[in-house]
Image 1: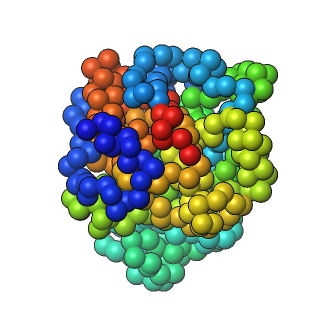
Image 2 (image 1 turned 180 degrees about the vertical axis):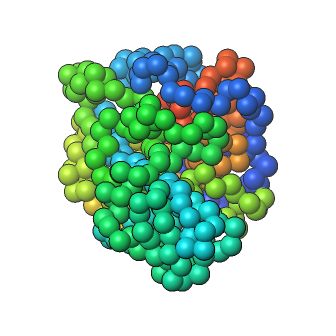
Image 3 (image 1 turned 60 degrees about the vertical axis):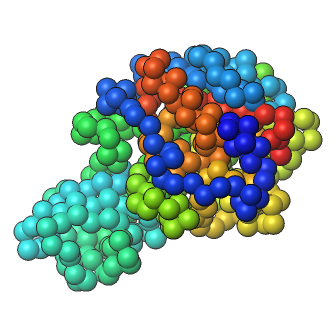
Length: 363
């Protein structure tokens, strides 16, 4: 069955069986969910799934020998904002705000948790310092207007928006470690976690060895943690995230491919940005800026990504489905079971995987 799934990578979705949510489940002991990062960024373990669907237990620093000088690594340079604010409504009720998207210097779309849904015109006082007005509601999100610059307010009074499976409140450590060392464009409310393993020394060593690097920006939303609620995957509506792929990045990728190198995406968010730009341009990579709701699941026709670095993902999540589309669902299940048996650390602060396509799956 593994060969069936792997051969489907380059096939049209019409030839692939329909999958159910239950196909992407696995059992994970709660103690394997990493609550804190490794002592050193590049000190994590690495499960390498090669092009023959075999896996190898390695250390993250082994990537230096697995990546070839002609390859190109594509990073997501979004910067995580301190998006969570606690406060009160003008009626005195408690409220929690999680900014999802910054619209301009004073307006945001946000998730709002309160005992009663705030109506347009409601005033909020966040962190005893930030005055906010509710302008309206757009489906599950509220449009809020800050009386001061949003980014400044979040930076001064906000909390790091740690994932729901991390059980401790955000700490000083999280401000540094739930952020990549190359982050530069503020807007994400969840980290592109595969990039958390790279420290500056490793990036310098890759450059010294001649490995090309390029950047995309995709502002990761809180929707990345939302569960898939329908067992019929064809009914699932992906959350929307803003991304941009620059002409400079396109040219760097074209140069690497011309030299015989692979396009290696660092993280599922880089995958989605690159593949979304291809989807928007008839299967060809072009510079592009837009929102994406691309749902990558088994049967997806790959356009540009040939290898990826990623963390371990939640059961029944769209990110696990993306990984399954890349290496095959049975390979994914076997590799994840091996990771559980070998006590790998899971999720945002956990260990990493390096996934390679087989020769028959190359784009």
